[in-house]
Length: 422
Image (cartoon, rainbow, N blue to C red; front, side):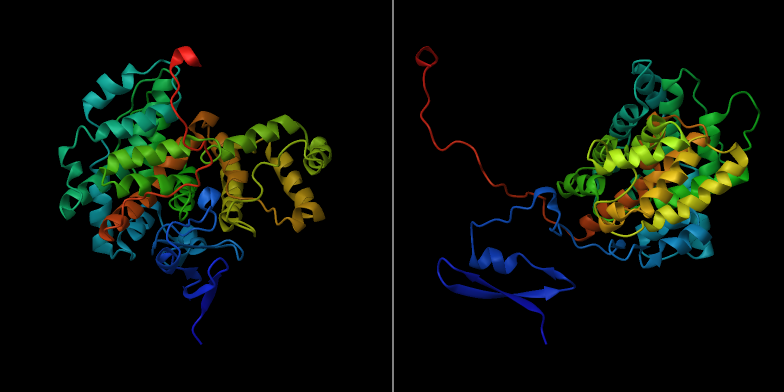
């Protein structure tokens, strides 16, 4: 039996059928039969704006897959650069393909000296590193004139490699500039996450040797944040990309969306909340204040997940491994108690409020030495591969320029009144 809906316009008595395909109904029959009538869907909560084969997310079941591969398997067995290849190409690489990919990314980590000397150093001394990153990514489009050749496969691939390779370099440079430390050049003998840690923390040693456990933790965190379907920043990427802007400009727009505290700043909010709670003994009272609507429980619940965020389970294990190296974050006991109390309280259970990926990631970053201003920057580095996968997909689909409609609620037509008569 064909799945479908029958819609009747009670104004005219006209009925028409709309097929249901993969849980989605097309707007085409609606446009054809009811021209000039629009859906009002604030936040696009029930609107599928794109068809995509990149990431599958089932929020009710707590499932996340990249190109069909469960996030749990990728976090356990893969690396970020292998995952970025998977997102962009649709398949896991062979050994030869992977070696070529790693070599390409590794040898594009350096940034033009003018980006550093004439652009990055022009920011105010206390500029937010995320603001610097947004601007620096956009500026890259002026250094690569072939970036606008979006239908040239070779030119497009060059920009993708450049962006993935240079994001850690720009991110580390933004941080070091914001704290008055000298720029550290990439060390291409190191792995992708180790190189980033070197550019962040190297002082005067000939070669920075990060702890392997911290390198692996960074790699896993990068994997978990590589893509997450049609979120705010990915939608920004697709909106800008649909105008056929170059990938640097589109990535800058996505990074700007991530700059917002409701998106990329969620783990910072968790750390601040734990600091406000202050002590282990204050957790029950804080929970009660949340239930009374006096404050918010940061790091619980998700726009999409109505079950335990699968990334949160993975990241909790990573936290244990990081704290063995760095020492336990003093806020961890508060976080564990908060999770225990919330998950045993009917108020949160009935509302399906479970910990999300942001609940523990901020504690890990803080334990590794990252200031809270760097949290959204750390999000942007790995998400670049997901953004670019979506950008390339919409270009290949020859997707229409995104132009939603609105429900106008303003004044009716009125006559202009001269200023002296107002």
